[in-house]
Length: 296
Ligand SMILES: C[S@@+](CC[C@H](N)C(=O)[O-])C[C@H]1O[C@@H](n2cnc3c(N)ncnc32)[C@H](O)[C@@H]1O
View 1 (cartoon, helix red, strand yellow):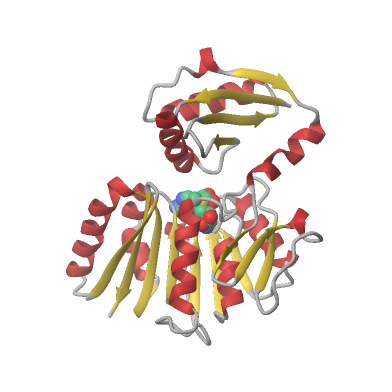
View 2 (cartoon, rainbow, N blue to C red; view 1 turned 90 degrees about the vertical axis):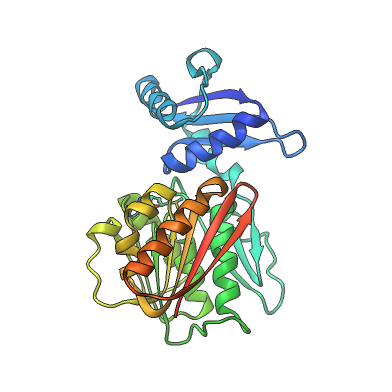
């Protein structure tokens, strides 16, 4: 195993996080020093060839020129180190009274009385909840579906498009949604999502390896969540809207703040062509935005 790393200044950290989001899932990750904003890009690979390919792929989506071939340091890793590496980047977090806990903290983490905890082993799939785009989705979903929210999840349905680790679908099931489905282009993500549901003894979520455009719906959903990058959301906007019920809610994330106005305009135009009325809201967290569409 090989570990590659290079230093990033604060401007590069932000740009690299956006590039990695576009590339996800990948073996790269960014470690940021929260005090000065600088950081490191790191990646772990089977061998030199795999690393070279990953460097090329990363350079193709990176908006800034990073001379990876010059600044990149490599070191050999024991197999054991590699299997543990991703664990450093997943910390327990809470939204509302939900606690998302790394499975390796199961014994040590104390869930406060009357609050709900679930365990996750994301492996290489995206979705620890530590990323802003996932946080925005989960906060919206919990706000929408908890007491006082607009949707009482009892008897309601939700689909998680691009389910990654399954974190959104699992939270939905714990919130009380009745029918929950999750799909992901990446077969590993669909498998990891099912494993994470089993880890929490949650039955009844149907995870499938399939792209949004290949998904054959049997019915519409009360809530559609898609945390995928902006160009995919825009290209598949017809398919995404078609999955929502007449009075359904669509939660779109994975959008850079600078892209949200254009995506909002695109969806409003599509809604108007379809003669559909909706209330649209934007939420921001750091450089990321969420677009919420409540059909009416
Ligand atoms: C940023 S991750 C989101 C993971 C998780 N839902 C979360 O919120 O943390 C995006 C996921 O979407 C999947 N994906 C990308 N394009 C897709 C498509 N066209 N159809 C289905 N899944 C897709 C990727 O494989 C990846 O697992």
